[in-house]
Length: 172
Image (cartoon, rainbow, N blue to C red; front, side, top):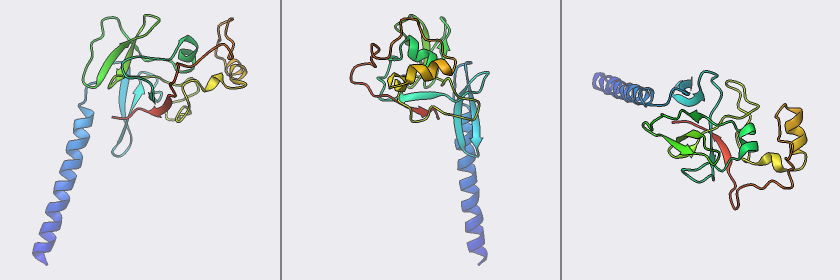
């Protein structure tokens, strides 16, 4: 019985040590100053914008290394902007947008916030990058306070051809 207890204590110590090592490894991962790494629940880490702590998103389906989010899209899905002199670090890279701005990317996937989110209250999960082009989308955005360009008409706007990008929360 004594050896059984000793084996159980040893196993628990090894498990606790490996969990602590994994947690420490996540905490030490480099990330840009526009980003914060927070532990939402024990062992569950997520990246947030800094200093607002809004949830961050990447889009499954968006091509790596480029942003397909145009100027209206970027009002709905604000970008995490990289400074002109920013350098890639760890899993964080930089993409050059069509409008000339630089945007942070995680593993080459451009990173965004969502216009309706509050800290710890994500509303963009599972939304298509261009959901607002559907019937009534422009009216909804206007009512929600998004300033659309005077020439914006949803029927003329097109999502990037052949791309269906779906938002998911960014976690290490």
